[in-house]
Every structure is written in structure tokens, then in C-alpha cells.
Image (cartoon, rainbow, N blue to C red; front, top):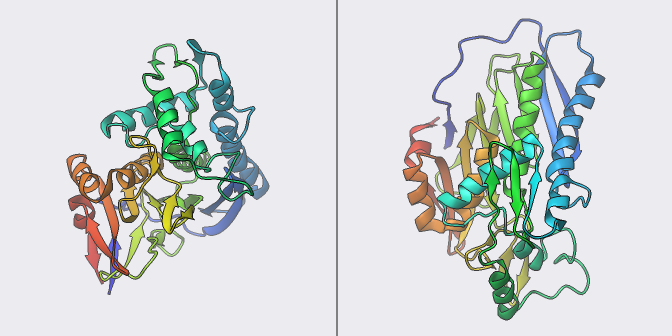
Length: 336
């Protein structure tokens, strides 16, 4: 059985006649990006490739915790009790991420970079490098104690952020999604409204292919789920998936995924294999898929219901997976 997820509304505007699909791509944020866009010739493909790459390069220059020279890198090294004016995009992403942190009781916190680094998922001292030793419970407790009371405040009118001292921002849970949205905005600014955009597996689509079909993508599925495959029509929608099966290491037969729960300082151990969120914004889908993963199989679905998020949870049970769907996700599904 194949299930399909359809957007609430579908535009009646067909793609213009004579369109062809062009493909673009490159590297960014330690991963790859790709764009498929339906265009009517003539079009300067080289200019479009350069423009798309430039949009992502700007995101990296502002928000990468891997680049010491980024605006985020400079903020992380700044002295205690200092205010910093941030670029508009950086400020927007940080403000959104801090909002998600508040709504989840700190389950997804952009200020928890020091914990991410401690567990070997940052730019240095990585878990896959020789000599890495996982932190002890005492190490985690010491780091969490050092983080206590250190709050990044925002001065919204002046677009400033307060560095209390020692806070290490990590926007990994939102930056890729924001990059997807930036590519979509760039394409639309060029008058291109039929496209599929992807950065590191996070996707957003709009309009139609030349054959009149929307941009169909299949949801990630680490194991076969009883309900069957789900294909999503990305027509004005974005999709992001967080999972424990991509980046992790094993410690004493325990899986240590890259998703850290800032509330405990530990990698998640809640048996969720993955969470997928479908949303109009790729940044929102990216952030909420991570947050719901950290919240786990009880708190996660409950919050998805309260916020009316279209979310799919895959819970490990024995050797298989059990699927949990939010009511909004379920309403968008049809069977073929």
C-alpha cells in the first residue's frame, strides 16, 4: 500500500508551456544541496548556479559553528556581558530557535553547543577521531553547572544579542532549513515559481513539474513500516526529518546519537528512530523535527497536537518500528 500526503490547497495555475527542468547543486554546511527548477528558455544557467551558491555561502558566513570567522563564531568567542549587533538573517534564525527552546522547556536549545561539542559532534574533538573518549557523568554535570543561569537575551528593536559569557551557539537544528527557505526565496525573486529545493535532506517545493505533477518525494524510512510508503506532494510545503540512525556512535552497546537533550546533557535514549515534520517553512520543519525527537514518544506527539503540527513519529519496538501520526498529518494522508 502506498500513502500520499497532499497539501491543504493546490494552485490551479498550470506551469507555463515549453518549460524544461534544470538541475543545480553543490556543497554547503558539510553536506550537499540540490535544486530542480522548471524554467522556460532562455535562461543563464551559470548565473543561477552562482546565485544559489551565494545564498548558502551567506548562511555559512553568518551562522556556521564550524567556521571560526563566521558571525556566530565571533559571538561564541566574545567576552562576557557583551552585546552584539547581528546580521538580519542570523538574528531571525536565532530568535526563532530561542522561541522553540521556550516552547519546549529547553528540549531544543541553540545555546547548548558546549554539550554538542562535549559529546564529539562539534567541529573539533569529534567522536570519529582517534583518541576520543565519551564524557563521564561528572563531565556532563560540570558542563551543565557551568551553563546554568547563562541566558542569551535579545534586543529586538536594535537586532542585538547578549553574550553572558561562555555560551556556545549551535544553530544546526535550524540553519539547514533556513538555507532551504533562502534558496526558495531567491528563486522566487528571479521569477521562478516551480521548483524543488534540498539541503542535506531537508526539502521544499512549489508549483509543478512540466508534466503538471507536483514535486513528489518519499519520506525517509529506516525500516519497513507496516503502514507502507508515504509520498509527499511538496506543493507549497517543506519536509524535514530528524533521526537517531544518521550520526551516532556506540558506547558500551548503547547508541549515542548526535541529538542531545540539553535538559539532561545526554544524547537521546527515548527509542524514537525518527520524526518527520511537514510545514510551510523549512526552518520550522527542521527545528520542530529536532525538538519533537528530543521530547520523545509521549511529550512529542502531545506537543504536536497542541501546536497542530503535521508530524510523523517512528518508534522502535523490538526489531521493527511503530508509527505515530499527529492528527494534522493524518488528515493530509490518502491511500492509493
